[in-house]
Image (tube, rainbow, N blue to C red):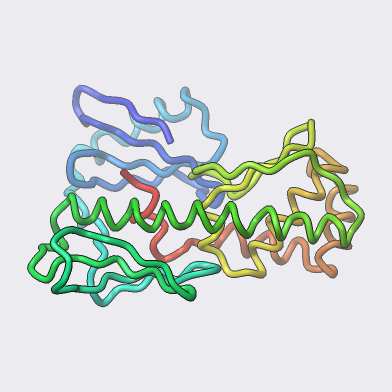
Length: 238
């Protein structure tokens, strides 16, 4: 994510996304959000902005996604929802048996920015904890099963990619990977493990990944690129 200001358009947030084929612009409250193809360069962004400026200046603010009492976010290991509680005078959390309850005072206004921010940060915090618990465990299991080796695993808050692997065989996963269905989480893990053998996306890489994915590598790859978690924007955008 990149943020900068324009004299005419004001605050602009640029979000690279792997599935984006073109520039998509939305006017939010207080800023302009641009979703661009993943490898868009600063020069390409500047050119796109200049070309789109007449239209962008006419965009009306979109209604930002808010999380209410009837909403539920389902992740790989837990579901999250808001619960009104007459016994609390400030927001609180409880995670038990796969259910994250975000307790809010009975009379609190959930639409207030500070309450939405608390809900967002609470879910993101638990996503990180669960990602650190589950993703290294899954990766180690797959590595043992397929005789693959990696150096280490880190969990980050990447908004542009689900995972990556360095030439030193260090694997990184985004905590937001936990928003995907398990079969797609497994694919991303196997994808990065395959990079410990083949660093590029050449024919050898896909042959290896296909063996790891029971012949469904490209099918799963397309599914991952198209998949957009329902509450992704709410959780990742500032």
